Image 1 (cartoon, rainbow, N blue to C red):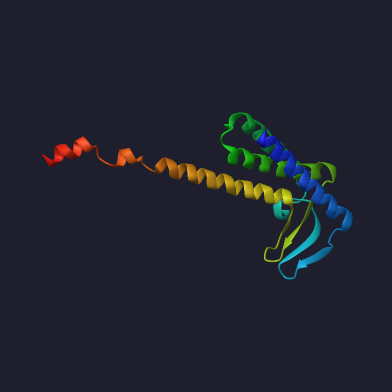
Image 2: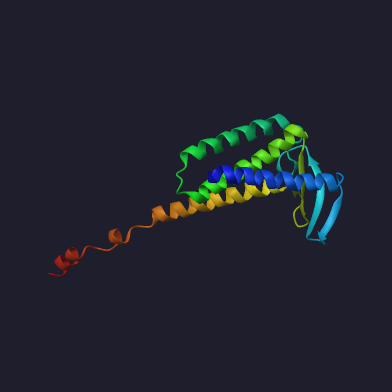
Length: 167
């Protein structure tokens, strides 16, 4: 349930923010929020993240569908106790769904988050995907670290073994 709720929540927030931008800005318009740090800039992106591979919409539609298939598969395969993993795949699914919707309905992705220290404009859906991938990387790292750590019992010699060594 967490996967579906997260995915739908991310998609709804993404749609809401994109509708706000589309109804209050014209493409190319910028609103300075924090000078030289953060602007809202309405961009219709014909490519992937950061405008890469413009004009190859079909590749991104297929990729998004494969990602959504993976999210659905994960929903049924990832144990319910792994809440952070389930949250992350819901975030990825919601982000993929948000940008897929734009590509299918508008033909381009609505981008608007414009940090001046970064040369690219992106959106909430992109942010959710990036944050979720980071979270998954952290969870994998943490899991591997836990597997590398020997159990306390294994790393210390048995009391009887020590007693035998002393004699």
